[in-house]
Image 1 (cartoon, rainbow, N blue to C red):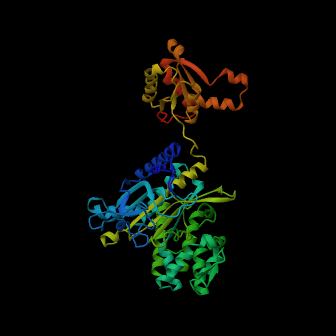
Image 2 (image 1 turned 180 degrees about the vertical axis):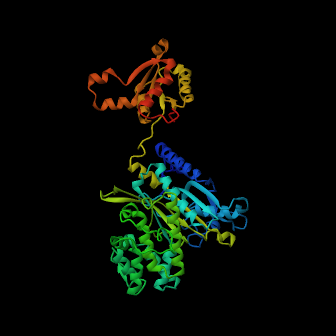
Amino acid sequence: MAKPRKQPRPKAQTPKGFRDYFGAEVTQRAEMLHRIQGVYHRYGFDVLESSAVETVEALGKFLPDVDRPNEGVFAWQEADEDGKGDWLALRYDLTAPLARVYAQHRNDLPTPYRRYAMGPVWRNEKPGPGRFRQFYQCDADTVGSASMAADAEICAMLADTLEAVGIARADYLIRVNNRKVLNGVLEVVGLQDAEKQAAVLRTIDKFDKVGETGVRQLLGQGRLDASGAYIGGVGLSDEQIDTVVAFLNSNAIVEDELKNGPPKSDDRIPGGMGTRLSDPHEKSEHAGRVWNWGVLDHLMRLVGKTEIGFQGLQELGEISDLLAAQGYGPDRIVIDPSVVRGLGYYTGPVYEAELTFEILDEKGRKRQFGSVAGGGRYDDLVKRFTGQEVPATGISIGVDRLLAALREKGRIESAARGPVVVTVMDRDRMADYQAMVAELRNAGIRAEVYLGNPKNFGNQLRYADRRGSPVAIIEGGDEKAAGIVQVKDLILGAQIAESATLEEWKERPSQFELPRAELVTGVREILGSHGLLDADGRYA
């Protein structure tokens, strides 16, 4: 009789596109989210925790099909008696669940409804370097207000949020555009065919990748890509292409035009268009405001004759005025026509937070860090449930990217500090050691007793080093009898070990004794000397 085949052991590995997060990373993320939460709360937003699972019907963007029912999302069908259960999916963002929540509970919610949400989302997409199938988002949205004040507030709150987590004012810029202005460009060009409009929008979205020449080719007869494959063009005329490119090159055009002074006033558009700079010296003082003025003037000439484009310019001007009234100038938040995002999703103002400092990529080349947040106005999302248009606007922060930026700027320690470790010299005196650790914890100091095999004392100190512990407590039989404890400053010890002579090392200035009754005071002094205590004198 053949022996039964041995069941193979499961592989200890994460699924493709997923990863594990350990102590320091989780702690850093929690601390950053706590700061963000504080800003959102200060602005009057309420927290919402919605289900991680939604019906695919409610998510709306991804519908099941025969070939791949879970395309874009992780989806499954509930089993029921007739095999026709609902399709369910893990949420792919935090906005689609908000639309469902508002539609379901709108009679019980205030209008406008202002909420923020933080948590993981899942996308069934091809993973790549730094691109995972599960990641964190941090959103804030206002549902039920068509006022541009809601959009201006979101931009101001985003600026405050970036500064609250540690991004310097000189290191970021929030750029604002309006989808209606882009619709005005399409109208000026004379495109009415929905398929051609979509093709132009897709091409515009490639401007950063292929540049002006590539966009001209794609809007025209087509181009060869890097692999030599031919990509068909949209087939626009040269005049139509010039109009689209003039929109995409707005920043460069305005920069050149402003060399000749501020543009003419146009009182129909807010945002500084009616403000005259009588003193030439005021130009430098109000350079940012003049920039917004110049951009609106350029776009007015480009799309101002279209109703939709003119409406978009008025909204941008109003946002600019509202931000200026709150003290948020174009040094932090600026009108920028190059912002093109979510073209099939957003219906009005769009915004993007870009970090402007340089980093080195994997090949050692300098590049700007780039975008860490984006959002805009989406007035059609809730309508799917209610049949009525419900205005909404919001922002989403990429948590992992923002954390990476803070590490790059040195605003977050690469490794979190571990607990104070009480070593065990005599396993029969565990109660004494537990009493010590309880005193430290009750005093707001993170601490633990070594719970491994205490036979080798060196292993205990190596354990404390691996944990990143700042202090180790030692009490053997002699110390117990004398009523003292030995306190070892592990941070100072590591610093001395790097450069100390043998004699200096033997003197062990990083280890000293103190009365047992002064344990908490002595540990707190060491932690304070290394700047590890918070404002309340705790080491948490």
